[in-house]
Image (cartoon, rainbow, N blue to C red; front, side, top):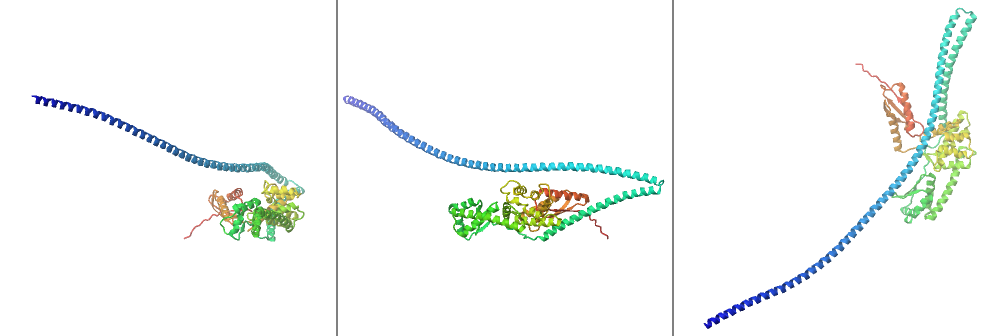
Length: 539
């Protein structure tokens, strides 16, 4: 029993020890678990804090990177904006300059239109006056015709009454009546004779005018070509081109400033081009550049010295050219300033014709025509010689060259006949002396003779096409051909729709439109042809 009790007690102690061990183990496990959990939580907190710090650092870095990228993008946007703004400013400035030029051009056009308007008003007033004069003459003519008709009826009635009285008249009375009738018939025949004589006189005057003009042309012989001002200067080598340009272009800038011309140095071998609207200035620049090339010393100071010397030589040369021209044209008593201006015409061209040679040619033609007509040949020669003197100053003085020339010559005491010829040789003012129409004819002959003037092929073809288009634009015109280098247009009309009377009106309309719409030297002849052909065949 004892042993069993001991065993039971031992078993109870063992169970109690086991339970206690289990409890202690559980408590230890709980404690160990809590300690491990605390360590895990602490470690997690430290890791979370590290991750948070790294996140904050990365966020700060990312923030700084974003700010830097934003600043760079903003800088690029600003740069792009400034470039676009500068481009727009440049475009606005260019537009403003173009608008300014257009305003200047419009102002000049308005001024020109104003001048043309005043001229048209004057022409309209003149036409109104002529219309009134023509109306008055028509009224007078109608009155005269009515009166003549009444006189004819009265005369016829008187003749009938006379014939009735003749049977009862004596021989003397009948003789008187017969003589009166013969006198009336003689007066009618005399009027017819006078009319035929006037027509014959007009025909003879026309033939004499043609004879005088042809004789003047045949007696004067001059060169058909005109001297052109040199504008291309030969260069011996490309190295000399570099010396002409100078370091950073200082030589060419100094040359352009001193002469007032444009110097063009391009890839063309052996040539430097001088460009300027003023022929005398261009001549001075060409001679100065040629002298500098021959001398070899090209620098700004030397350029100014050479240009000034050439300019003085040119002025002296102009005086000599004018004096020689006066001697050759046999013009005496001319003021030195006028002869100097005539020398400047040596460097002026009109459609390729030298103006000085044209003036001398016109002077000779005027003298020949005036001598044939019994007028003062010396005065006519003077009028023709000075008629284009205004072209020597039209670059510097406002107005047309006839008015400029008249005002200039008036200051130096030229005669009224000369002044009227200068101002009226383009029919701008009425002619007060017979020398003005002589100058007009001689001027037209000198400019219209073959070879006197030249023009480019493009302008020549355009003028012929315009001439033919004007003619073919009229109703009833079949074809039109410009012949004789554009000095005549031959028009073929439809004979079914246009009769002989309308041909006259068509020719007049074409001539009027050509005069108004085209610019040409001399005159253009308009010939209208109308032909009716009827063809049948006998078989």
